[in-house]
Image 1 (spheres, rainbow, N blue to C red):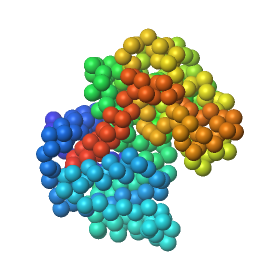
Image 2: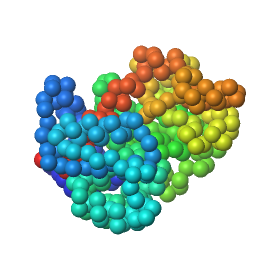
Image 3: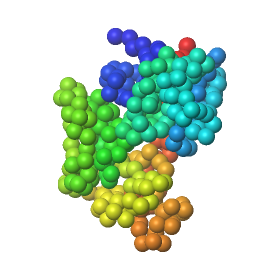
Image 4: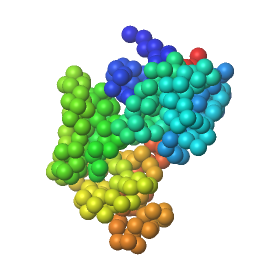
Length: 332
């Protein structure tokens, strides 16, 4: 059956069928090859998009801007300091205004309801660039990267997410793995497992039962065996400094190091990370916290720079996967 995503918003992978996700991945690979060949694109010619950023980013902003320009589109960037969005103007009113100006809207911020309301009221496709409970464009890029480096179909791949298992990347991976019939393990402290959203877990397991996926939550290092991917994310973001002592004590056993790589018993296991990563002490935050006695690295520098690490291929694929989403939903 042909896939047609024209006019559809991209808010969460849970709203897409496995066939639709497969289409987006294939399109991403095709658009990447097209760019590598130096072919000028026109699939977004005459299209205007706006990027709404309540949370800063390097990869998400650059990916949307370059991807749009590559295919002949035009971009407007608005952050929280350069618009009235949600302050002097309601989200509903802002959405209705922006929908008159733009062909597509990207939102990166906090509350999932905001991106859902933008889609509800704007009348144009809306793309989720990150919220507190999801990061679907990242998962598309991650799946592209897996397909480039692991000689298995996705439904034979085992992904182990290590560390803060109740953050948005862990949830996003659950959604993606459930939809694509993959094996996902949230590997982290039992205390965090108890904080996982019960409704989300119920919905994920329901989808997994339909697709043949396996979704596990465990603190037992035995789950590392057979992993194809070890994935991590930061333990604390800017503004969460007060939580660092507790996070470090809780999550240090789940730091990805070469011992953990060896524990997979897979010589070809790959390490992935959505970035930015704390892997050394060359950032202000990591250096400052280390001076206070807290090692906030979620991965060692040895792993980050090893042959197992595919983080920069993964970062590049943000652009290609995001381009696929835009072309599929508003392109020619």
